[in-house]
Length: 120
Image 1 (cartoon, helix red, strand yellow):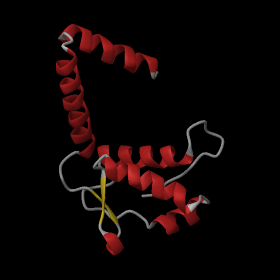
Image 2 (spheres, helix red, strand yellow):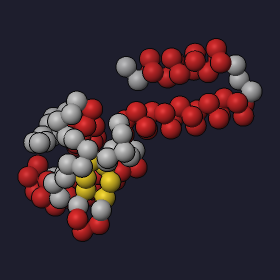
Image 3 (tube, one colour):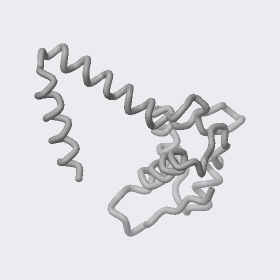
Image 4 (spheres, one colour):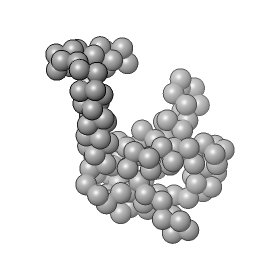
């Protein structure tokens, strides 16, 4: 798997890298258990600071897309579709907040729709 970064894009390099990994996992180009390049190696290949790649990997790990195995490296998570898992966790947390606020289902759905439209 080859990654690229567009220096002229408005999206920060770490986010470009993070999204490329997410997309590759979703469409099967990166299968569960696949090893990602080392932080230093990928940073050097892309002409980025190691901290930039490390941030992308850290966010991917927090989302459950990848798992760090110490000196062995960073691997695509083997526990199902990590994107679906992260979406479900976010949805569950949102439902907890809706219930705590005593909001209706209609109000909650409308809030999500507004938030999604605002990001487009």
